[in-house]
Length: 429
Image (tube, rainbow, N blue to C red):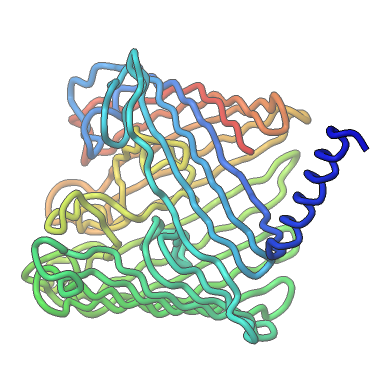
């Protein structure tokens, strides 16, 4: 045997020995994500952090983009680690930058990756219970009007016959440097149940507890809810009702709370498309002394400044009136949360979705909103009309054109009516 053949044989034996010495582990790698780029022409969405209206609102144009990358290390069907990252930027915003939401100016080269989720997803051995531990997405059982956001915690769920039970503990905020870690927190505890009465009817109920120890010790908000969904022939309907009691959770001098919210929605096949409708109500302050305003979870730059909404009613399909599922750094809304600055709201919406061809589809929506209660001024906020046309270029790439206009109501009619036009590409994988 020649020297080269001996070396080849030796290498093969060595590789085989090394392979048999390594424990067998079939790790499956999953990659998913999206890339979205959106050109905007508007007189509203970049007006201010809260999307302030103006009596002299000049128009602007901007191009924003987002990439989300999800990697899951799957050991088996019962165990995986999920990681989810995001990079946002607006063309021309900054370069050679360290921080979130920038890096698209000339030169780029910025450190701007954001952590959305990192959690372990596994089934507890010898039980029907699944667990998610870490920073994870969570949406309440009420279409997100109380909370829909990424949160850190432990969530458990399991099925028993026709019943599904889930419960979770989430730590929403920890004062940290302002106090000893673990002593000044905002915690959320949830318990949800759902029962499939039949293939066409399901009912559910919930109890949520929010404890805020940041401002004073033990501000507790209790929330009770019921929900149901049914198919009534060609019509699918769903609804929920929520009652809140306990303490205000984002006020130092917390008052007692007695607040409620309710929604009913329906969808039916009409003609070539689907017709949708919904009514949402959330109570506002009625001047009784205690708080009657529906509470929702908030976030903020500091623990004493909870100014941003961690809730949304994306099911309303609004682009300007309420938070939009398509917005990125341009996430602005006339009313960004169901609390609506303690005024609550009544919102009525209708929409129609229609497939025009195998590649083209369209949707149109109209929504009217008013405050539920207000001490001063009119309750009428406005009416939005919007439309979207989609063209499926490839299985994973869709181009869309959007337009929206809001006819402001008497409460806001001193301002210019907001409008928005966008062109967008969405790539998912």
